[in-house]
Figure 1 (spheres, rainbow, N blue to C red):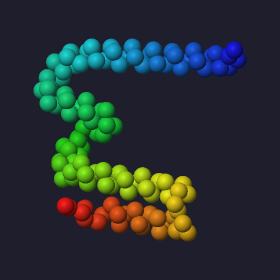
Figure 2: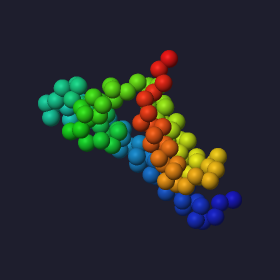
Figure 3: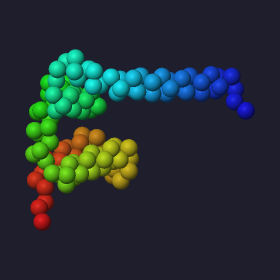
Figure 4: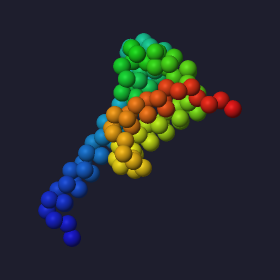
Length: 118
């Protein structure tokens, strides 16, 4: 049995999700009208929607996309693995006696070193 506080919290969360769904649905249905009113191309609209989804100012999106082309998927995977390892070690997993600063330097060196090409 739910307490009064839990019941109200559940109702609030449900209302939030319903409201979010209605707002997003209404926005998506209006995208063609917005595109026509702004007289923008499909590619510009796509870039603006992508920038919005990424939380990036559309002005900088071209720079981000250009920079992304410089790195392969394996390079990005290597960097994310270094960040994940740093996170775990800062939380105490296989940390040893290294200080936070030493762990950070080790992670930065791991990220900046040239990838091993086979």
